[in-house]
Structure formats: C-alpha cells, structure tokens
Image (cartoon, rainbow, N blue to C red):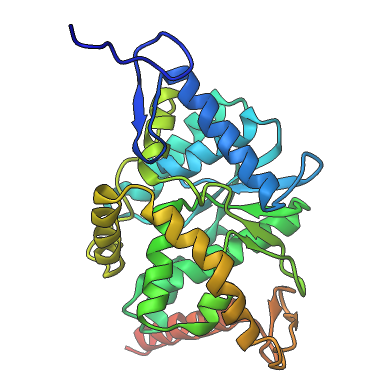
Length: 321
C-alpha cells in the first residue's frame, strides 16, 4: 500500500513541496512558513522594526502583492504605494491599478498613487521621445526610483520596501558579474542604507524563490496581474533568468547559496575597492530637493527641461507652418 503524503506539521494533504528544504506543507502551514521566514529575514538583516513607517511599492504583480500581504499579516505599518507610469500598451497600467485597488480593499488598506504624468506633466514615453532614447526601460527605472524617494518623503516614511525575490536578485548578480559592473556589485544587497538624503531601501523577499510567492498569493486567494510589462518582452536579462532557473531545477538551493555566499564573501571585497574613493558630494536639487551630485538640477529635472523644450519646439514649428 502506497504511503499517503501529508504536511510536515499536520495530517492534511500537502499543498506544496519545498524541494530544497524537503518540506511538504499544507496551505495553512505554507502561509505560516512563508510569513515566519520573511520575519526572520527582516530581523537577521535588521531591515526595519514595528515602529517604522514602510512605503511598500506595489505594482499588481505577484511579488509585490505577496509582500504587502505578508507585512500586513506580520503587523507592520504599511503604506501601499502605486506608481502609475501610464503604460497604454495592452492597458497594462490600467489593469495593474485595478488589481492593486482590489488587493488593498481585501487587505483593508488605503492606496497611495503617484501619477507620473499628473505630477511631472510628461509621461515616460514623452520623456523618452524627447531624449531620443530607444530604451524605454532605463527611463522608466529612473522615474520609478525618483517617485519612490519623493513618495517616501511626502508620507514621511522611514523605509522604502520592494518585492524583489531571489530570482530577481541572482539574475542581477549574474548580469553584474558577467559584465564586471564593480560599483553595482559593491552596492548590491538586500539593504541599501539611508544616506545623504536618500531613504533606506530593503528587499524582505530576497531569499524566496519566485514560484513560492506565486503559490503564496494563490493560497491567500489574492488577485494579481500575471505577465510582465509589455516593454520588457525580449529583454536580454531573461536569458540569465532561464539559465539560473535551469541550474536551480537540477540543483535545488543553488540560487540561495550563490547569493548568500556573495553577500558574505565577495560583496565586502567590492565595497573595499571603493572605500577610499572620494564620494560624490550629494546635495538637494535646487528645484525639487531630490539628492543629486549634479551642479544645478537633478537628472529628472534635467529630463523635464529637455522634454519641455522639445515639445515647445514642435508646437512652434506647427504654428510657423
């Protein structure tokens, strides 16, 4: 007679098998395991405490939805923060916002929205067009970092929290190693300390695999937006992710070991390389107060000036005709 599989902690049938931990868990104990694991990560890396106000960046994807749910369940002070980038392709931003609104309603949390075009007067696409930049993703990433920092200031939040998972972090690590981006390697990690006007930024999910977060939101019956930004399709970084997923599938636990060993053994070496270099002096932007090393205005304000000039020139040409 075949042996009936059961949860490690009760008699219920397993909901999931955590291969690298050799754990069969039912739905309830899987949820508890995830939340306890994240709490231990927060404590081990001294990310934040129950007294801190957390600006939790939520996009509508499974990772950020899981992050918000976990932190709420653990009793932290969370401020859900959605950055509306105005991505019209496939109605991506509209769909994302609807999901985020549903999640916040289920979790009984208020939602705070940073509308890029509404606040900065131009969309990421208009800025990219004005700057004649083909890579929309780089503009988007810069705007998101700006929005997070300004949002944290507005709400007087102590910490900016994002939902980066183990797959995200090892993908970035491999990319930085293969391209020997030394300054990136020196700064890569789950905690970026507050300094010179910037808020502390942390990644409480960095030790959890992407698929575990998928099963967590499913277990909690929370909505999430499946699929990624339509402009990220075909990005070269996903080749790195496929390679890492193949390794992890055949050698469970490799990704976590790879990343933790980097933090323990290699990161200090890269940090030391730049320890004696004179840091760029950061000061508040003369216009928006965002920290910058530029002489006058920060990068975003510079983008906005160039975008304004670009569209004013186009209007002027039309009027001349």
